[in-house]
Structure formats: C-alpha cells, structure tokens
Amino acid sequence: MTALEKGITANGTGYGGKSWNILGQLYFPKAITDSTFAFETNSEPGQFVPVHIHPTQDEFILVQEGVLDLKLDGQWVKAKAGDLVRMPRGIPHGYFNKSDKPCRALFWVSPMQKLEALFNQLHNLTDPAEVVRISAQHEVDFLPPEAND
Image 1 (cartoon, rainbow, N blue to C red):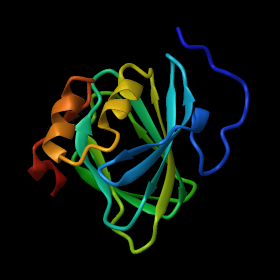
Image 2 (image 1 turned 90 degrees about the horizontal axis):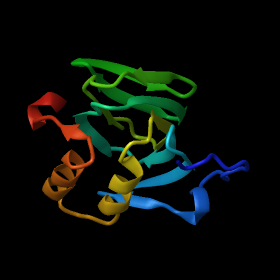
Image 3 (image 1 turned 180 degrees about the horizontal axis):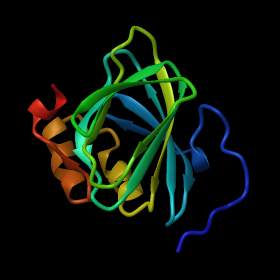
Image 4 (image 1 turned 180 degrees about the vertical axis):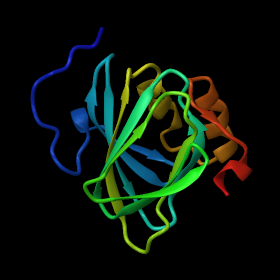
C-alpha cells in the first residue's frame, strides 16, 4: 500500500517533479496513494478528453480557472472556477475546453486503481487509437465518438 506523504506539491509542478503529456495536454500529479490519485490539468482552448467510463473509481473535478463543458451521463453541463463536479463510478463523462481561454482543474479519483500506471504509459503517445487501447487495459473505457456529440 502506498502511504500518503505529508507536504506540499507546488502550483504548476507535479509530485516528485513528475508530469505527463497526454495527446498534447499537460497533467501534473499532486498526490498518489492507493486510496486516491489527484492530478492537475491545464487545458488549452479546444483540448478535451472524450467520453469514457471508470468502472471501478469515483472521480471529481474542482475547476480552478476557466470553464469546462462536460458531457455527464449523456447531458451537457458547464463547470466554472470554484465548481466541484462529482462523477460516480460507471457514469459516462468527458470534458472539453470549448472556451477561448485556458482552463486549470484539479482532478482526483478514488481509489487510484491503475490510473497512475496508465498515465505513465500514455506519456508522449501521439496515436489516439493507441491511447484508447491502452486505457481499456487500465479500467478506463472510452465510448464511441458519437458519445461526444
């Protein structure tokens, strides 16, 4: 079991100096334990993560700057700075920066399951089909593209 270490992960940095580039979007791990996995995203206008399902994890998003459009269980919603999005396991969800400004958000999942290992494998990949294939091996199931409409 990975224990939570006390301390601060500074703004704009990742825990242990780590960061991931997943299809051009930057992710910074903030806290990593077996019970939870927290990471910051910095989404430029037009960036998104398509609709997917975490069958074994609950997920949360705290929007820190900007606005995210989310497809949450088939419905479009907006989350702005200060809003907390709750996504129980098994609920289809995707997030999209449809604005003309960057968006920064803190995500966390509970329990961590295979998410850190997934991010490690996805780092610097450029083929979306390969990202989908590897994700399915780590309990993140992407829905067909029409789910994003």
